[in-house]
Length: 195
Image 1 (tube, rainbow, N blue to C red):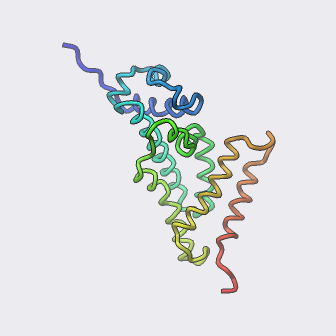
Image 2: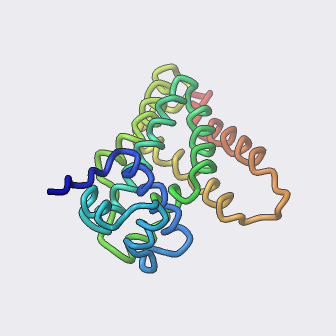
Image 3: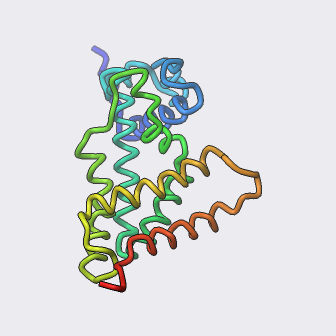
């Protein structure tokens, strides 16, 4: 009797990586499990064995993205809000397909697929913690930390999205623009000196 094929962690990681790239290039409705298996140099049975089906594979790819992003944020957290902002941009530029898959919304229009709530929220904890720490040190206004964190996230997210979409001239100094935006965010949330 033949032994069953074991699909290991390396196959799983390769499937997750190629899924993000294929969906980014082709769109979720055009990508088949055969396409993913071929790009990962494995079989569709590996996908079924490891994930269950297309919706589960896409959810796993998004969750893996949020885990990776969250880890990069935790590593940058000791540097405070600016380092978190810089790490946000760096991670997005290093993982553009995954970033668009996580935040682009293309999957929602095609299939019931969204990140696991705990995984997504865990990735944003370093930002909320940095806001709370900066408030305790008197460097940020004492407002609801989750509101401040969401406002900051929206600003850096928007700018990174524009950069990834190449929404300006080819020679645009995105790094300089981004640093100016981080400075602007810091000023916007600084405590009022009159109080």
